[in-house]
Length: 222
Ligand SMILES: Nc1ncnc2c1ncn2[C@@H]1O[C@H](COP(=O)(O)OP(=O)(O)O)[C@@H](O)[C@H]1O
Ligand SMILES: Nc1ncnc2c1ncn2[C@H]1C[C@H](O)[C@@H](COP(=O)(O)O)O1
Image (cartoon, rainbow, N blue to C red; front, side, top):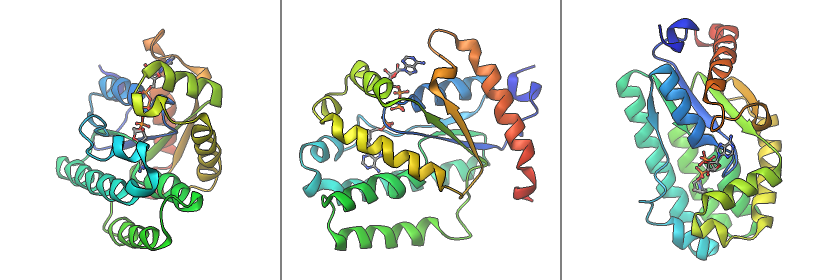
């Protein structure tokens, strides 16, 4: 019996993993998908044609990058829908607008016109009754020092060259964002409470908490 059956998690469940850059979403996505025998939906970082350019010049590329991410995530959403669920998704579509686009608009690195065009597009595509929300958003949180340590350890060049202030501001925004998030049920996990690299069996207690939360919120889906 696999963990999905053991903890009675419906096979069509869609779980999205949210949290700031470097916090451990991809690691969690892989571990959960393996444990539950679900498909994965990853952000494609290496093949993103705007990401390097964006980190070199936020002002010039922030609109292009947001539109690109929106299109990519929407295609993934369609793929998840076509399979009938059973997915773990690395980063939610809600973070694109709630964190990234808003942060760049507030900092002045996305123009008001571009921000309005982007949010109109986002709302028309996502905030409709036709858009399937995930069954659960698993939010990963941890101290900023640990997060910056992980970004450094991972070693993506464009992120290494970005000043720490950027990650600190993002970390603070994430706190506010998750405290006000209500588009789907949320399970918050502190990265100090598990270590999937040193102790992969820790995934079972996470699956158990996910199962509990899904049961508690199942009435919302009916
Ligand atoms: N429990 C952990 N302890 C230490 N490092 C970790 C842990 N989980 C993930 N990492 C490392 O942190 C870095 C960022 O993790 P990743 O899953 O890519 O984050 P994200 O997808 O949120 O950006 C990677 O180098 C990864 O190996
Ligand atoms: N919507 C986004 N706007 C700007 N940058 C973004 C957006 N979504 C992801 N990113 C960046 C942040 C990281 O450098 C990479 C991948 O994110 P990660 O949290 O490491 O999975 O893309």
